[in-house]
Image (cartoon, rainbow, N blue to C red; front, side, top):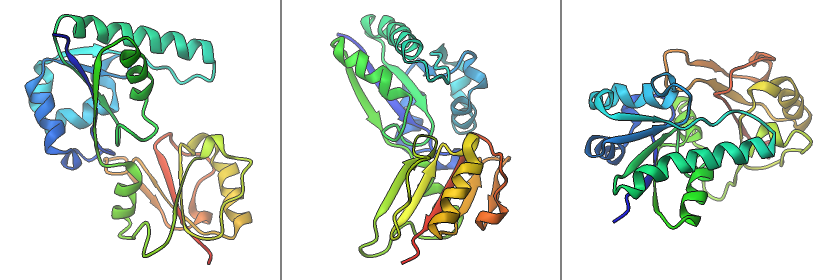
Length: 228
């Protein structure tokens, strides 16, 4: 019997927001994969280790996923990552792949999952609290009420788009293009709040567009309520 590859969301940053199911899977399995060159230096490891001390004793597997727009380089790294986890699956061992937030939302795990499934192995997604839900809770604000829509944008890929007048807009992955993102918000007439490193010791909160700095870290998330 082959092992199963689990994509486990560890939440946005606060170890107390990890699910009981995520904790249980880490405790019950020996092979833990992490998306980085040095597993213990990844953010996912640092979150999970604070909630599951046993993680330090597990077999940690590095699955390097570099930040690049080179499609061929991406494909090569995804194939290499899939090969790494498949070596354990063939031996009948489960692999628990830790990923930030929720494993179904803009997750690096998805690319590995697709290849592994094509190669005939079983996979399962384990939900975690998404960053935008945690950010809304941190701001003590609802994401949507009654019939409001929620629009989720990977901001770095949508800089040429205008934002809808109504509903809540969530802008993810906006740190490196923050100046342009702010201009889009201002042209739309929308105000916004931003949280950087939500739920961690490095958390920073900005309550209006004008407060948001022109440069911000990768883990920066903007929530903007509609003008109508």
